Length: 265
Ligand SMILES: C[S@@+](CC[C@H](N)C(=O)[O-])C[C@H]1O[C@@H](n2cnc3c(N)ncnc32)[C@H](O)[C@@H]1O
Image 1 (cartoon, rainbow, N blue to C red):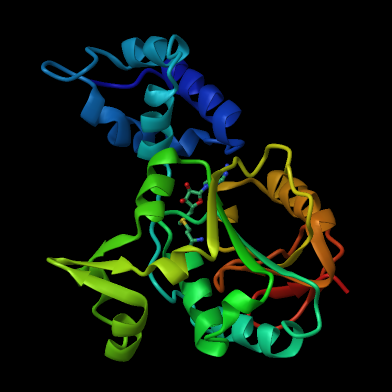
Image 2 (image 1 turned 120 degrees about the vertical axis):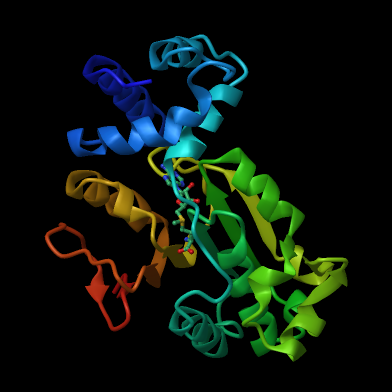
């Protein structure tokens, strides 16, 4: 089954409305490929056009969710780019005792490995963290990733590179899985939030993780996102993007430091 140019444009438009991510012409083949699992004989829809119509009439939001999920990658892993977790530990050593509260936002948290790595890093630095006003907000646009994240149950194969001591302290073994312990989970609030929607926050953040999310957005959209996040950072707060990413060519008011870390000076 093949995806007509006009139907591709309709998919691109609905995807943009849902996520703020533009799908350029060169993504047509990718869309055709990723959506092909829904299209054809003995599949939910006979044609791409039929699937598109179903998306328009989807009142439950479940089909739209499946659609977004098929086109966005959720690739992530525990302690990805470890320097950023060392940075969290450094920040807490310097500020936990002196700030009235600490908030860290994992924006585009995928299946939870990033916010759990932040929580574990914080507990490694301060085992008595529950005595402080410390919280992590973890958000994503895909409900299914958040459900997975909240459950905190990871196949052992995904945790092979993690130190045994760390595993036994912060995880419980359950058959072929490791489950995140309650004291780690309690530090995190998981919420559905589109990066391009209005942010309903009452408190400012000390650190915002925005790693490997901007890759989906055009330079114009990236700029908008950084400018939307900016007012929600504390003065002297930090924004962290992925090590392979950069804000070059984007207007912003943050001071670039090392390791893709930016400061609201
Ligand atoms: C590649 S993963 C990165 C996960 C993690 N931050 C890391 O670096 O390992 C990108 C995540 O961004 C999320 N994402 C993409 N567009 C988004 C949007 N418009 N709003 C919120 N999250 C979005 C995806 O659902 C996905 O879970």
